[in-house]
Length: 398
Image (cartoon, rainbow, N blue to C red):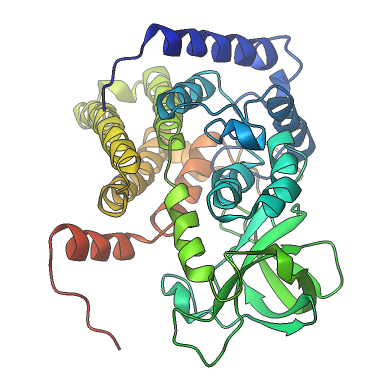
């Protein structure tokens, strides 16, 4: 991938920067959400951040790379990279629509029928509809094909029974894309359907999962007779596995460069804290700060390599290497943050309407434990790298 930006792409950058600075800068209408909603802070300012999502949609900044035929901009990959870079630099808040735009939206664009696109994409593009992902189950995490949630056909509807877990945004979402077993006699990877299910209905129970941060943006979701239209099955009945794998590929697109810049923002704050309390004079700490800066440069190169693979139809090896790298980096960055804070890292800040109020370093340290698990655990990524990149024998099947 050519890392240089054309004059047209730089003009696109200036447009994005002007929009973001006008809305998020001091005195702007969304200044209160500047920098909020990051790791460990996802529960904060929900209504304000949802309003921000709709502001993005009103000005065409959602679904940048989707085709113009579905009402989007049709932006190039590098233009998407430019926007995510500027979003991170402007302190853009954590996105309420991360699942909507990043996962289900491109899935509907690539695998959905024209009727499904017309029904579901406008709400995502406007930022008015929130989605959650119904993949993981108690016995089907990394081994996703082991899922047990079933959907039985009743006329033109599915009747869904089962349990999903680690469901981000479920308590806010209007829709969930649910992997269900619709043919229980088919082989493990067959007989699975990708069903779009409305959340506001009888037969759905949502139970928050309290994390070590004291918050609960994750949930368990129980389906007990919930209904979804058969026409809202992406890829058709029993065509869900291919669609599900496509959704996972979309998870690691152009936003990875924005993620790297968000990590850089965190490092800037950590470095400033070290200068403020004098720990920057310690040789070992200085080396760790320098190593983190170097790691971010490497991360950018890895992200660009992943995007190049995406353009040529590849992904799994490069994206697995990138996921493993950034997950371990971010966990170590959280450790660096609390080490620099010293004994104060053990003390909660002030009073708040929370189980225990945390500062940014504490939230980063606790939340980044999850980075090595969600989106494909470190162990799974190592297996993919070993088998698909290095050609090692496959792990024995039990």
